[in-house]
Length: 97
Image 1 (cartoon, one colour):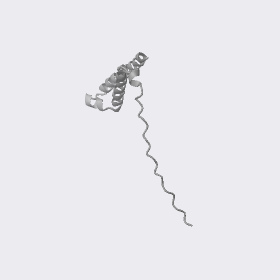
Image 2 (cartoon, helix red, strand yellow; image 1 turned 90 degrees about the vertical axis):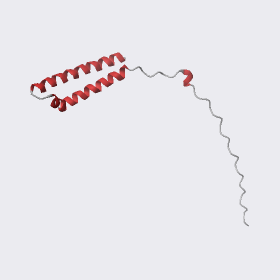
Image 3 (cartoon, helix red, strand yellow; image 1 turned 45 degrees about the vertical axis):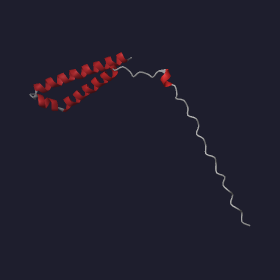
């Protein structure tokens, strides 16, 4: 299942990189230098999208966390119940006649 997700993300990354290349070519044709090309808002958006997709690919490539073994998953021994303090016997107030 992960392989399919990675392939999907890789295809998206290729699409975004193609858009970045086309945008750079278009901006260079307009006569903008490298600094102005990097400041272009559309370029910033596309570069951010590429970073996002790269991060998701790396996250999918990581091995999943190991599940704890059954021995480690056993509940800890229960503590004995607390001893209750004996109730103080309160003397009933003497009834006044």
